[in-house]
Image (cartoon, rainbow, N blue to C red; front, top):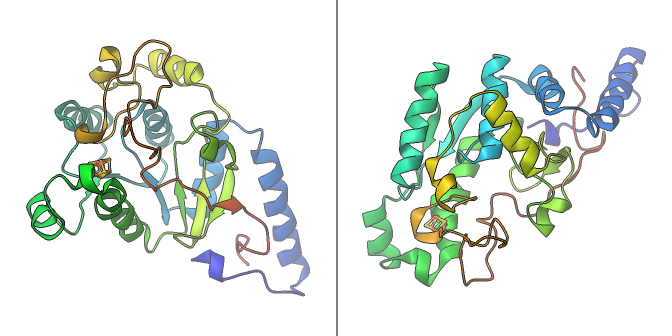
Length: 259
Ligand code: SF4
């Protein structure tokens, strides 16, 4: 990706202007709206720009914006084979409503193969390995060939996510990561969904604020952390897709447009 194509020193005036413009964009994007951030990312990286959605409320905001602005983004979901039936139904409903496909990305091993090689219910015995097989490795595969990917994380979701920047490098995949909703609150997300009539997962109304694979997701009680139902009873809080070490992007790590 572009990451490997660092800026060369001593370019001409036009290249310098582009570098300055790029750095100016990074500064101003910190206070930009999600729409502005997405448009910037699409202008710069599409069609080698991906969005991985798990159909959570934040992801639905981004999907709606991508569809609304007709951005050339490769939208996909990691189909672990363990999603709730309600999530699969929402996937189909979104495709129908927006007339736009959402690519399903499957793990290399189906559930039977995983059980036979690693044991039954790997999510109970070794959830990190299970997430590695069913989410992290497929994401790496899906992102190959892309220059940047969009995530739907918000800063106040976890301590890890609070360290993220709107635009950062993601050394795990060797590409840029763009986080348009970083500054938004949960209330802002839900207001957007209501105001724009975006379909959502009905499980949210049944006590599931954060929804992943069914074996690792439980409802939360009033007052509990919204992500308390994910891997309940375990220290695990992330599937590994958004774990650090992403780092703020700089002109020395990313090729400016046209350079
Ligand atoms: Fe496996 Fe649970 Fe991770 Fe899904 S969330 S991939 S079931 S460990």
